[in-house]
Image (cartoon, rainbow, N blue to C red; front, side, top):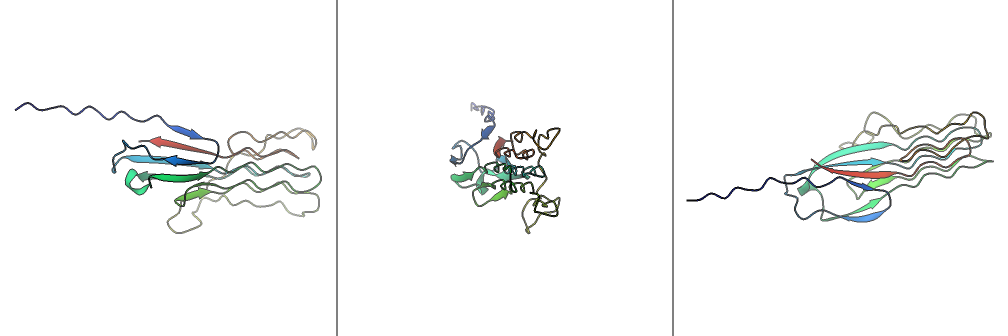
Length: 173
């Protein structure tokens, strides 16, 4: 009896998603195939006294069977920078209801006595959920008036500057 050889599985190319969308799971994935999903929350905007915090990073590995056929992906926007008050917070980035990465905290203003602390920690904040790791800080300038927008993805804004937008990366292992 002649045996047919099974062609090796060709890995799918990684996907980088930079705006909110409905993602469709590739049909050729087998239930046991592994999918790594990385998320970056949007960076916080800089205020008139400090930089915004970088968006949080989170990563999970799923079997294809654990992921629905379609997933609503929300990519967090960077927070607005402001010249007179605190900056805006970065938006959360989410992979449907499966997990998320919080956006970075905004830079403070001259009326806020203490620096704003961010949501990124090394320990997971919810049972069964991933740990959040801090994103990059702002592209600081040399003076209060020389801040720059946060790097993409997820960088916090420099003084008075916008934070970088979040991002999603999907890798097929």
